Length: 308
Image (cartoon, rainbow, N blue to C red; front, side, top):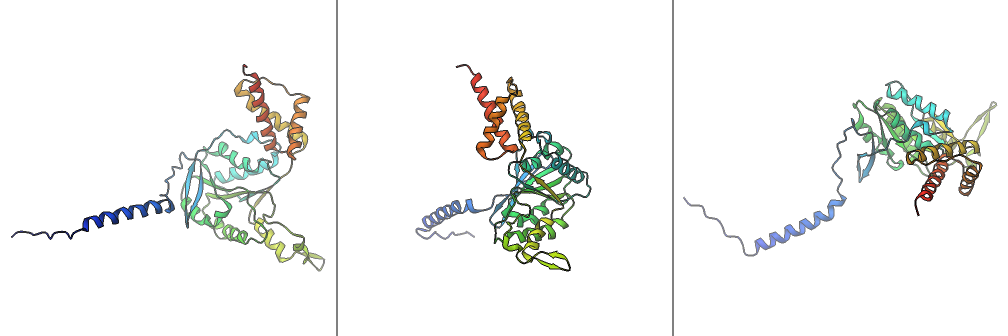
């Protein structure tokens, strides 16, 4: 018995090729919108990652981090450094520890303090995960990926604040109470902010304060805003540097930057005046300003030493 193949209809092969070509064009256009394949992170060797939102989902992306920033490099914040380091030591040791809110003046070392913890405790199992404020609602997804791992994870949200009228801060309250408080004990949240209560306070918020039997009772608006910060067990406040503190940080960073280059230098009144003028031109005295001046001064000195 012989098999007979039905002949193809005329033009069918051409129509099929055209369809496949159009399908390929559609896929090329859709591919950039499709979520990337989740990256498998080797936490034995990876010290930090960032949560990246893609559509309705997100994933952790490994980061290459430098460990040249030490806790000893952060001057003028001895009390804050000691408290956060103690809380982190407890956490790394598997002991009870608190979520931490670092708030206060800009450029005073809040973010640097959190990142410097990696150099100190990375070998002990500490890992850092950066997450944006707008992605805080994804914390349950992040925590689910970390549960059961032997490492200790600090979820770091830098510059956390909410504008007046935003309702997103209530999402964070529910996340802290509903997710992280019940999360595995290998997860903590560290956040930095320029505001103590994360939400701007208005004079009208205080208009409804009441005195009952000699006690002051704040309005619901104030209670709502304060309640958000109360979710953090550890509050650390940062203030602008005094002039001696600022100059001490300048000296520290000049020495740290000059040493690897073999630059010989000496502290002088003229150098101090130049550093002060630098700070006055920027309207603040803080660690960031001191570091930027040190880079400016050391770079200029090295350039002047080059042969013409």
